[in-house]
Length: 164
Image: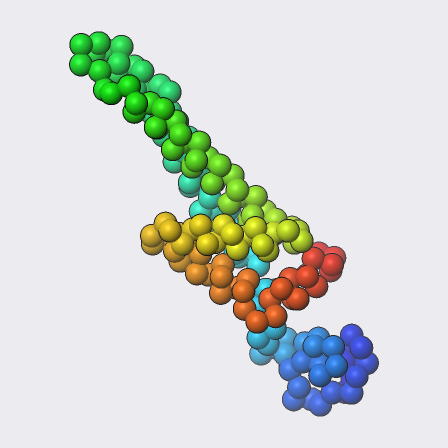
C-alpha cells in the first residue's frame, strides 16, 4: 500500500503517512487527531456568525433605546427626565456591541472561506467570548479546543492552500 500524497510505503493499519503526515484511508475512516480543523472549522465558523449576529442585534436594540426611546421619554416628561449621562453611555455600549458583533461575523466568514488570517482572528474572538457566560464561554472553549490543538496551525495552513 502506498501514500496517495507522497508515494511512501505504508502498512494497511497506518492512520497517517510516516513521511508526509497525510491521512490514509484508515485515518479518514476512523478520524485521525490531525484532522480536527478539517472536521470542525465550518461548524465553528457558523457558530461564530450566529452568536455574533445575536450580539449585533442586541447592539441595534441598545442603539434604538439610546437614540429614540430615551429622547422620547425626555420629551414626554420634561419635569423629571432621566439623567443626561444615560444616553451617551447607551450609545457607547451599543457601538461596542455592534463592533464586537461585526468582528465575530467577520471571523466566522473568514473560517468558512478558509482565509489565512481567520484562525488567529477567530482565536482572538474566542478569547473575548470567554467573558460572556454561558454561551460565549462555551463558544470560546470550543474555539480554543479546535484551533489550538497540537498541529492545528499547520493543518489550517494546508486547508487555506487547498481548493474548496
